[in-house]
Length: 238
Image 1 (cartoon, rainbow, N blue to C red):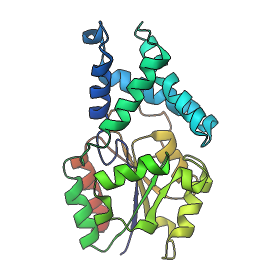
Image 2 (cartoon, one colour):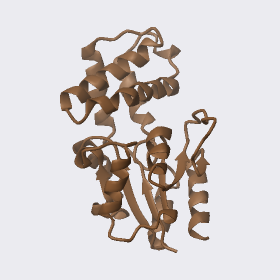
Image 3 (cartoon, rainbow, N blue to C red):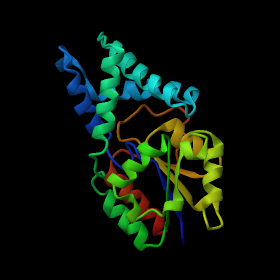
Image 4 (cartoon, rainbow, N blue to C red):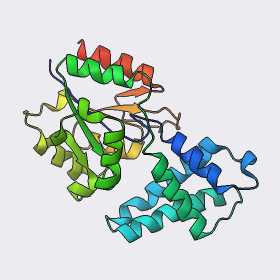
């Protein structure tokens, strides 16, 4: 049976934490050894997600959000940085995201899905320029048709809004049977609640081991790329 597997990019197909660590190191914070880098990264994402929807696709507002989120995350550790330092961090963070590679087992998984003639797609939040650079760096064009890559700026709407998933459905050349559509992502709100609102199946790539909501609606939960490979292999062999 032909299924549709749609992936998020950041922290689903590759580990964004590596770029974050390098950018934080460049800040040369005196108390850097006292920072829990993984927790700091999660805080930055949390504060960014909370304000992302209000930025729209205005570049100035987006940049202000990026400055705010790292300053706010560091503030939780009692560390204060200037707007200029926060901007330099963000620019380094973006630069290092051009030097990325797929999680282990991910290339093997994508090869398997193509060999099994499954339909692949991507839905990702962000600007077209930044996200396409990641698509290129990860060589995702080897597996995912260009028409099946949807970036929120191009769609004019972001995850978790229902409209972006409907937009994607309209892009596909195949009739869409909802029971055969699976979305894979790391962000519970954007990548689980969002696609569930249009009736898709979901696989929560919870590699950071975020707390599971009391009424979790994810159909499948995996905590490492190897488990994702195993889960999807079972789905396509049904």
